[in-house]
Each structure stands twice: as C-alpha cells, then as structure tokens.
Length: 324
Image 1: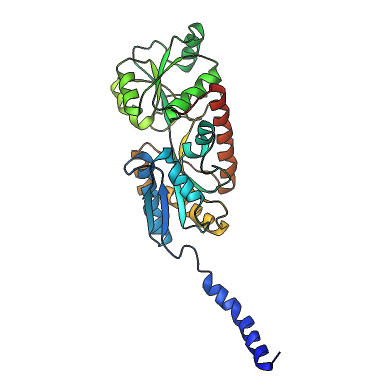
Image 2 (image 1 turned 45 degrees about the horizontal axis):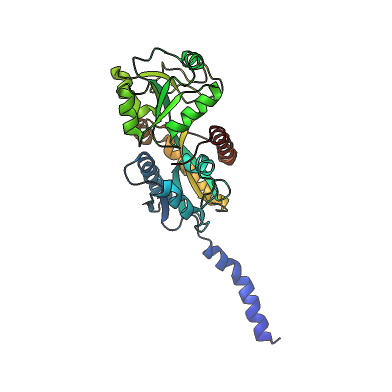
C-alpha cells in the first residue's frame, strides 16, 4: 500500500466520527406526520389536534394531521405500522383499534401490539350506564336482580357492533351473569333517541353526550364505567362499587409509533405529551370534551394494552360477537 493511500485512509478514519455526528441530527429535525383514523371533527380528531398544537409548541417542528378514515380505522393503523420507524410518522387513535379490532375481525392488516411502539396515553372519555326515567331499577344491584328474575325481558340499546356502548354492555352482562335483549342501532344518535323515547330501557353512553339529558331529567344515571367516580358526575357511583367489583371499561385515546422506533424519540414524545396534558389551556379544552387526562408510565403501556386486548378477546369470544 502506498504511503499516500495510507495517509488518505487515516484521514478518513479520523474524520468519520465527525461526519457521523453531523448525520445524527437531534430528534425531531423535520416535520412529523400524525395519522388520525377518522374524518375531521370527531372526538379522535379533535383530541388529536389538541395534542398536535402542543407538540408543535414543545418540539419546534410542524406536526401535520393526516385524517385517514375508512375500514373502521384500519387504513390509518396499517399505514403507520408499515411506515419507517424513525419517529416521523405517528398514529393518534382511540382504544378500539388496539383492543377490540383483532378479536372482532380475526385478522387485521397490522398487529395491535407487535407492530407498534406505545408512546403516550392522552385521555379517556368516561362511559355511563343510563336508563329511561320510567325504568324502575335505580342501581346496578337492582338491575342485576331484575334481569335474573326475568331473563331476556329487559332491553338495552347499543350503537354499531363493536362500539364502546356495545362492548361496555357485553362486559356488564358477562360479569353479572345476566341476559338482556340487545337492540342495535346504526350509530350513537339513533340509539340515544330510542332510549330517550323509552323504546329501550338501558344503554351505555359517554358522559359528554348523556350529561345534558341527565341534568334535564330525561335520563337517569345509574353508574359510570370507570373504576372510580368521574368529576362530571361526582354523585354517580362506579359500576365496580355498586354491584360488580372489578368492572372497568375505558374508551381511551393514545399516541403510537411504528415498532422499533428509536427509544430516544419515543421518550421525547412521551415527555412532551405529559407536559401537554398539564397545560391549563389543554386541561380546559379536554374537560369541555368530557375527556379525563389518562397518565400511564411509558414502561407500563405495552403491558396495559396487552391486558386490554386479552380482556376484550375473552368478551368477544364468550359473547360470540361478529362484525356487521
């Protein structure tokens, strides 16, 4: 080897670490794309945009919301699962895409656990079991007693198969060991109209939708689906404390990244999301939506999601639920 070649190789070896440092720019160093599995204006999109604005402020980079509705959210989830694992493509989603989709459909274009790196929980929206005012039972224990005395006689409404109102009631009936007649409607609005009109006796709704009707006396709040009481209905007990210990069903919203996204990027995003939830302006906006901040340590998120997937898989299989 000539002396000139040896000198050139030595210089390259000496300079290489410097070039590597230049190439490894701090995250984030370019715009981030955040996919939302629903059209603009819905609960997932609205909360996602609250998060987006906070991320822009804290990270100093544009965050572009990309609404990818369709196929029950599977299009957006699959796109993120297959995206480069570099922290620049994210998914802001509601819980169903990660916890009930797989047991319902049997096969998805992504795996809800293996194909994602959990980043941060944002909120959950409490569900509430409500009844028409003419319904005689006023507590969970009384409902269970009535249902056991008259199997199949009580009626409950749900929106579409696999919706939170449907899954909440499926879990409720299984844990209580009761049978009630399910009446399905094409969406939350028709299901609520049926309940308000007394066409069904019971239903699960979310607190945001139900609260005005509870306050006006058109609906009676029986119990909330969260493990503890919720701030917007402080006098309404949880289902767990009023007849079904251990009952909990959360409609949560979270931020996910493709699997194998660098831990440093995930950690930075998690820390940013945690800060965003603590901003007074964000707390006010989320509270107006009926959303409750949901804090889960980053190290616990995968275990929590797996446990939720396992729980809803048991519910779906036990009830024999099939997609529409």
